[in-house]
Image: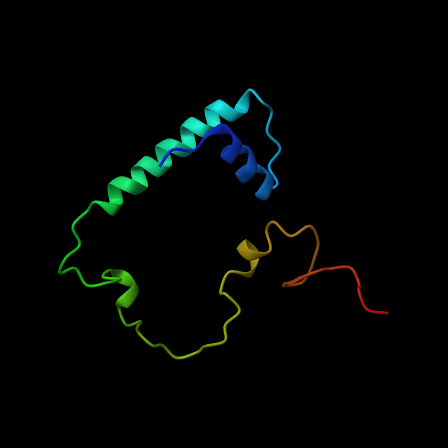
Length: 95
């Protein structure tokens, strides 16, 4: 599949990306290279490969919920613009 310049302009318009006319040929080449790679992936033989095989199917180890203070209040608050004790100081937002 090859994208022409009109299609590239339409994609840019749908994505709300402003393109100068001199950018269209370069972007068309880049998009065509990406589509060529996707076409190569479509040619891969996946017969016998279980769908979604990988780390996503691993069961997560359960742990107890434990409320902590993070154990490092000074490091956590080191970048705070303002603090009061071990808490972030923020402007009042409710009247």
